Image (tube, rainbow, N blue to C red):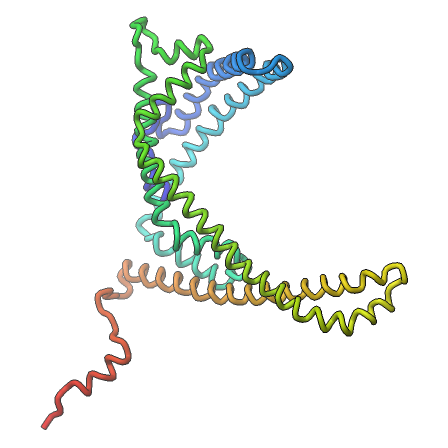
Length: 333
């Protein structure tokens, strides 16, 4: 669903919706990209690297070019193909309302196995409550600004200011003037995007991740703190009665370790117990949350398919109001 919403339209100039055309177009550009990348790395080594590292960077330049060539001709085309296949698959299952069935299946899994993945579910739940809506809007804003920047960059790739019949960017790349190309593209990006939207979007995404970190830290720190407190409580009587017995069992040169061993053992057992209690609480939450997701998804799916009819506008009155209704009605004479 997210892929379908953020699908690129139109596709880049070097790509079509045919997998064969995508792969062939990428392979035609591969050798040229290899040469340009190797030349750029060599120029970077000559201008910016210290003398002790120039030879090493220049020797690595062909390998860097080969890696970039591999990514551009193999990985990126396969990514476009997988993207198209994902969109096509979504179009196939779209009539079956996957927006309802997939959450129902996920809810069923969470209901029975959520206690095993308590930290993951806690993180997702925190992100859903604190940062999902803001992050969705932020990603949409970043996507719109990225489209503006890409469109401006494509137009700049066709600019021929000197009128010699070859685009200026291609001339700079052929000459190995990568710094001028980078400066030119950075300037185009800065001119085409909205700085306020980008700043707000990045801040919203960071706020969502911080909410997740804070939730995990607070929620599971409580369990560890509770375990440590329980360990401190049971350590004192265990030291009083258990340390003399353990000291007699240990060799004479290791009797001093009787107290620390009892302390570490008590705290480990207490923290494990507290973590088990936290797992039980998380399992109960996962069962309730997963069952609710599954029930809502199944009912919504059945309603859309016409098997049942649900009127979302009808609401059941609270029990107190239902009890008061007979008292408010006049008696029949």
